[in-house]
Image 1 (cartoon, rainbow, N blue to C red):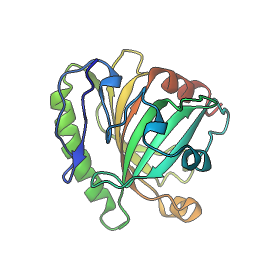
Image 2 (spheres, rainbow, N blue to C red):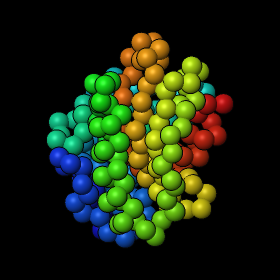
Image 3 (cartoon, rainbow, N blue to C red):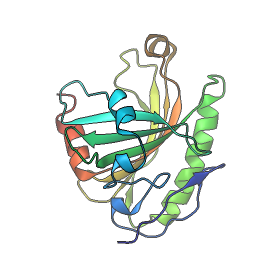
Length: 199
């Protein structure tokens, strides 16, 4: 299967994107679902950055610095104990550190990317972007704008585009930074995330 290359540069416009019906057709910085993370990152570096979800260690996540004009970080999800380190989900992350303009700047990029994705992926089911409270923040002061581009009716295999804005209390506690994230999730990982990761 030919792989389609999804690259965000400078204004984060989509450079190469055509009709597709398989999440594995898409890549971020040359990496995609089904690839081995070991082809791109050192195994020791990955192992040193592993983190797990509260209720299951079937998958781990790793967030790595990436020297790119498009992203500051690349986040991967990999099945635990997989000797090949096959990527099950991948995201590119851009941070917005100035709280005075972070929402405005993030949503500007968000709208640019969504415009390109929506026109190129009109064959997919696309959700509406709405301002939603971030459930993890019990103060109710953190929120996100997220759009899903679903490859199946179950919503288990999708592209996810979102801006996350953290409230002051949550930021002070965890030091999370407002950011934009573009990610691809495989069916197996999405099922685990929805049903096991936070039980």
